[in-house]
Length: 305
Ligand code: LAC
Image (cartoon, rainbow, N blue to C red):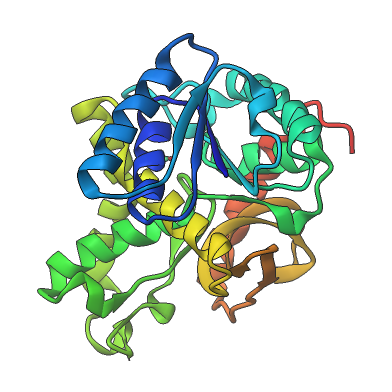
């Protein structure tokens, strides 16, 4: 069973994505009476329409997550227009602490995929609050930034999205780091196709587009859900897929003691290994700005080491 904690817009869209990929039965958990049950019923009707025989259950009782292989945490207050992801910190930290203790109690062997913002800080908090090994706690952020970079590059270059391998790492936030030198079009490195100046606008669009979606419709939904589905599928099918995810660094990239977006190999056990890239100085500078920003944020969370 795959548990999705939080039956709000992102959680229910993530549940639908998992159903459409036919990955496993789904349990939707929320504190709001009726909400997960209603979403589960609606999702079950959708599955029936698609001829997909997975079971979707809605519950307000955390005990129902017992035995879950993966727990996806989307619960928390979402950003409102004009807010940064970091503005959500204390409120969502309290929610993540509560959920973490229930996961320890009812799904102690599960892999934990964080979505709640501020993503990297919440991933770190969940890692410390559960005491799980770092390979079993990771966050969905950079894979979403990479999809957005691919979306804008596809428009800018006039090529199919599926022909673009885009890589964004670093903080899932103001210091995200699109890696032009590790982005390619059918294997042709981006710098051989367009100058750094030529994609400066595309990089800025990538950085600001989530806030634009929030301004227009109040929140991002389907894109985060698709990022969740990609990661859950890699774990459930033991794909050994390489995605940028928020992972705990213990010396990689010369960094220790923070969760931040880096490429990692994902399989049944969670993070099999972190991929270390050679970053040029200006890339490392942006990456370290994200690391410093996250360490400052984490220091505001009373986390017992
Ligand atoms: C976004 C949220 C999930 O980037 O952080 O859409």
